[in-house]
Structure formats: structure tokens, C-alpha cells
Image (cartoon, rainbow, N blue to C red; front, side, top):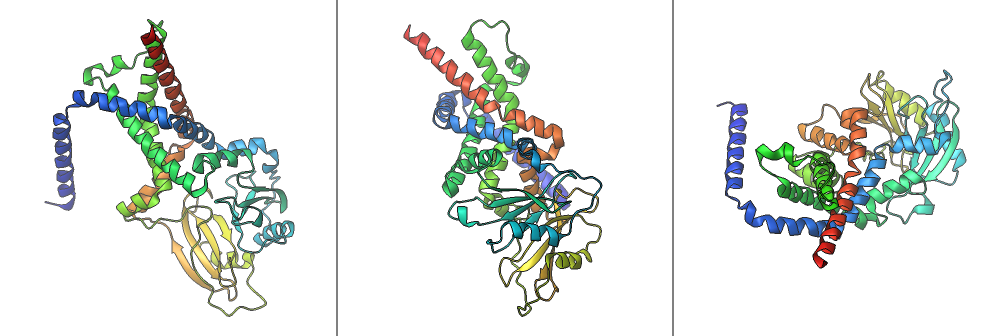
Length: 400
């Protein structure tokens, strides 16, 4: 038996075992328990489901909304070329001369976009869990068009609410727990709904005109839950991973592939510090010798006198926002290449986890997927309103 045949056989055995186990479970006897659990989750954390859904719906198009709210973030190309990395960095440092430390220059995803330069821990927000400085620079003129703190703009305020509920690290843990409870709510809801194979289509119909308002609310609640369950399940599972990445990373033996804006490799410069350090532009030129056709995704300056320049490259022929292909670390004093991190090809575990990250925002399906994910973000609100309203109608009728 080959290795592939062995695993196919094991999978078939697991399916048979699960089917036999489900056949023995007395679902009819457990229905009161599932119903109580489903209602209890709705009444206790249902509002948080709604908040996560609505903020997530808006975050799917975070960049588009941010440009719409801030027209200065859209620049004119006019057939010009990007200014050098040294000119862009000099413009930022001239606008913020008292900020010492590492800067991360993220290249724009589109020709009319700005270069976003990040400063991780500004003094103004040093005590906050996450509130870096974002400096937007016109790549064609090296003009600083905006300097904003994370959480002070409309869209970053929404992101902060979605990611941590304005409660820092504790709030992020709460958000992860809410994702886990949403998975339980979806599972119990589908268990309560399941009508049997022959009645699925009939059970999803919405009768018009309805016999009474309570029945209409029930049918809307049922249809919204079933149709939105698959997307909400994927969003909740991927969100759970984003909050608690070590769970799946240990399960899939992942190396936690780089990808976040503030990720960096811990590579130290080895040369003796001197008064003539290598500029960011020179480091980029040195790194370019290894990957002449790859798009530059971001440039990271040394964080201390022992740090290194880090140049991130994408895959040739793909947009700069695509997955990272390689990271080159250059000694800030000698200009020697210290380390080359080839991110692709990734192990299967890394590829799967990166897929989960993209799945959370619908990017895996392009614009249609993002639209679908954005609409799905409204499903928790529909479920909450119809469920609570129907419960109130039933309690009112019982008093009569």
C-alpha cells in the first residue's frame, strides 16, 4: 500500500467512524440543550457578534474607504518615476526630526497610491497596545501628505474596535473568544435547523405573505443563518487563528511565515559601527543584485546601531501586495549581505495558514469574494434582530 493509499484509507475510516457516531447520538433528546445554548449565546454575546460583523464588513474595503475619506491619499502619477528610497526617507525624517528608531516603508499597491511609512512606538501613544504613526508620502514628489496615528482616523478606529474592542491585549483575547463562541452558535443553529435531506429546499423558503409576523421573522432568521453560515464559519475560524496563531501553527508545524507590516527578522549588523553608514538606497541597490526583477514590497531601516537594513521582495510579475518571496538583510555599516530569507516555496503548513489569513478578508476570491464577505458581515445583525424580536413577540403572546 502506497503512502497516498494509506492516507485515503485512514480518511475513509474516519468518515465511517464519524457517521456511525452521529447515528448513535440522540439529537432529538439533546434538542432542548442545543436550543438553550443557542439562545444563551445570542442573549449574552449576540451584540458582540453584531459588532464584529459590521466592523468586519467595513474593514473588507478598508483601503478604499480610507482613500475616499482622505482624497489626499490619492496622488497623480503623471508618467513620473518614484523618488529614491533615500529621498522618501529624508522627507519623513525632516517632517519628524525627533523620532529616532526604525522606519518601515511600505510600497503602494496601485500607481496612484502613497508610500506608507510606519513608526512603531511614537512617544504620543507609547503606552497604548497598538497605535503606531502612519506617514503617507507621495512617491513621485517625496512630499509628506499626511501624518496620522493608528486609531485616530475613521477606518483605523473601526479596525481597532474590530481587533481589540479598545481594550488592548485583553480585548484581543476577548475577540478571539467571541470568534470561538460564534462557531458554537453557528453549529447549534444548524443543528436546530437541519430538517433532513428531503426537506432542505422547502425549509429555506420564505412565505409571502406570511401567516403572521413571528413566522416571517423565523423564516428570515433561518434563511439568513443557513445561507450565511459557511462564510461566517470561515471568517470566525480564520479570526480565531489571527488572535491565537500558535494553536494552528503548532498543529500544522508552521514556521509562522512573515507577512505583517511590523514583522522583521532579528539579524544584527556585524561590522564595527562607523561614521559613514550605508544608506537605505544603497542597501536596496545591493539587495537588488540578488532579485533584479522582483518588485519591492517594503524597506525597513535598522532599529538600533546593531540592526540591519531589511529589503522585502515580492514575486516577479505579481503586484507588490502579493505574498513575500524573499527578504534580504544588509549590514548597515559594511553593506555586506548578512542573510537571505527565501519565503517561497512555503511548507504546506505555512501555505495553509497564509490562505487562512487571506480568507478572513475574502481576498482569496478577489473583488467578488470581498463583496460577498462584506455582505456576510451584516448577517449577525439580521440574526440578532429577528431572533430577539421573535422572542419578544412570543413572550408577549404568552402573557395574553
